[in-house]
Length: 290
Image (cartoon, rainbow, N blue to C red; front, side, top):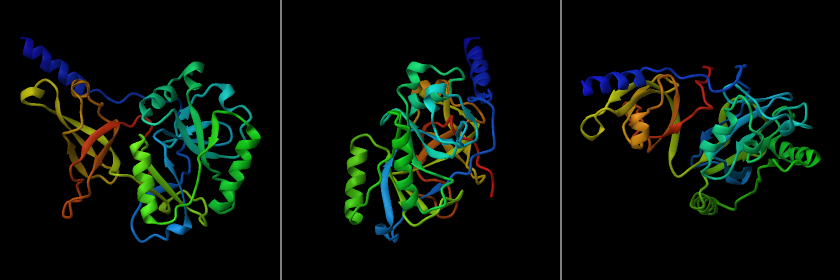
């Protein structure tokens, strides 16, 4: 009887749907998206900054939106005095504090004390007509004019060569950072994914949607053994590693999005190699097909 009740409870958990996490949904903002760094780029053409482990946020001149177009309910003081033109940036607490940032941002009734831990780390001016070189200089003036401690500009700098880039990556990740971003100086802001914006990490990661819970066996009996997930391109595969026992007992709900890390792709199938669960992406939804 006990095993039967446990199985029923597990089935109930496994078939739950993802609940809305943010306020009213709007159209997805026109964000510039990053490709993965690769050899052969003219490094001298790029600015480099730290890749922050936070929630991507877009200020449209009146409200904050997630990358998926959900409204972020910030306290009025947080965005008071911000420009009527868009800002692109990251809501960030500190290195390694992604979960806390998401917890703060997802609240429908903002907690002032918690929001004072957040910073909006701005890295672009989407509506500015100039190149990134010009936008970066203009952004410095915008941030300085507003003069708020929680609104900061992400530092952009140049590196001499690839050895210096790799040394910087090693130093940043060694200090708990996520990686680096590279932004082409002569590029214009456009809502597309291309080499004008690149991300560089020690590992590869991506997002996928949970489509099934696969029951565990042996020591994982009564918990999940793996998640079946689907990539935005429709490719299905399993994530069987990277979970804590608590996450196996209370897995991400069906329909939710998760981030996984991997080491390259299988040449024949295209399935990520050694894919393992990292975390739930509560600020993410399926991108619209181009």
